[in-house]
Structures are given as structure tokens and as C-alpha cells.
Image (cartoon, rainbow, N blue to C red; front, side, top):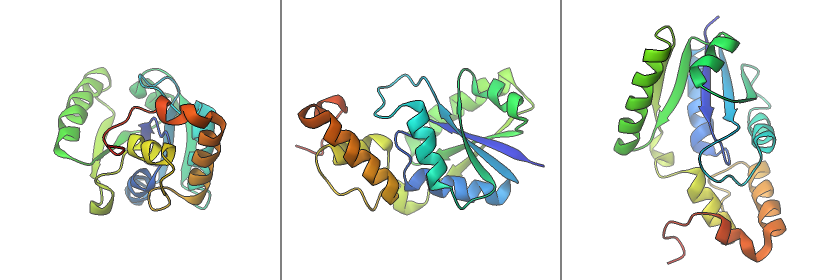
Length: 175
């Protein structure tokens, strides 16, 4: 059985992630969507909350599972018996970053391949940061995320109140 791991922060999972995962599971027998528990950026949801959101997004997909991981992704791949790491590429700048990571991972674990999927055109602008910024400002993110994620975002920003938009690094959507 060919197993791949799709690692990421998934804060929150959005339709771009979902598209990559569904396409990857056509190539691999099983896909583990692995939520990184200690990302180097501020997150809106805990690792367990992010895992649950991912799990709900793939509730009807019997060949996709959601987990939380720590440490090096290649070590996690070895732990779960994965032969490949799945990554998504949106724009050219993603390629340079992903290429460097792939080379480093190959040096650490030459038996684990990195497979990059080019994002679908309709998701090429989509990032978790964009989703969070729009949601924090009361915008409609229903075309970016599944309903359960939109509801989780609404709840979280209600909990945060007026501080919500200040927690999210902003691009220029409110200018």
C-alpha cells in the first residue's frame, strides 16, 4: 500500500488544502493529513481543534485520515510507514521554498519522496492567513472553507471580540 503524508498547519483547512488532498488520494492508496502541532507562526486554533476541522472536512473520505504530529516530517513519515510527502504549490515563490525543503528532507530521508501538486486555478490566491483576515473582519469566507470551518471561525472571533482582528497578521484587505 502506498501511503503519503500531507503536512501543514491547516489554520484553518480551506478548499485549496481539500483539493490537494483529494487529488493526492487518487495517486496514493492512503493519505495522512498531518497537522503540525508547533508551527513557527501564530495560530488561531489549537492543534487538536485543527485536527478535528481536518477530520470533519474528510468525513466521507475513507482513505484520508487526520492526525497531529511533532518534530521532523521525515521522522513522522517513517513512523507511519509513508513513502511520500505531499505538498501544494500555488505561486512561483512557493516553489523555491518547497524545493529547498524537499532537498533538505531528501538529505535526511532519501527513501521518502516529495510529490508536489499544482493548485487548481480557483484556489491559487487562497491561504489560511487570507481566510483568517477576512473572517476576523466579518467578511464572508463561505467560498473559501467548508461550512463547519466557517462556523468555527465565527465562534472563535466572537470569543476574541474586538481583539480578534488584532491577533491576525493583516495583509492589506482592510486598507
